[in-house]
Length: 126
Image (cartoon, rainbow, N blue to C red; front, side, top):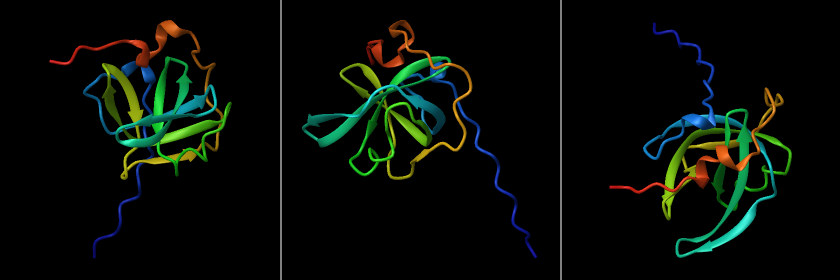
């Protein structure tokens, strides 16, 4: 009676469009360094610096997600959200999101300069 609609292909965003109020974003990013362990009052998590051709961002990962992320690998983040930590943007993947290794390499050269680092900008939330 009701035929299933085919799934739409995911649309990937550029890092340069990230704002503190952004949510439900998909990214294809290149990992620039190994994940670093960070202790906080919420527990232990990992942060890794990732980039695409438009800029770079710090991605926060849980223990189960960090195994996929290796230096120089290309990863796909689906349904990513933004968390503000001490006025800086962190890209996070909650329980509805997904982190996976990309099948295709990243298009273009990733931006490694610090001036286009979205997480380096300090925001004052009102």
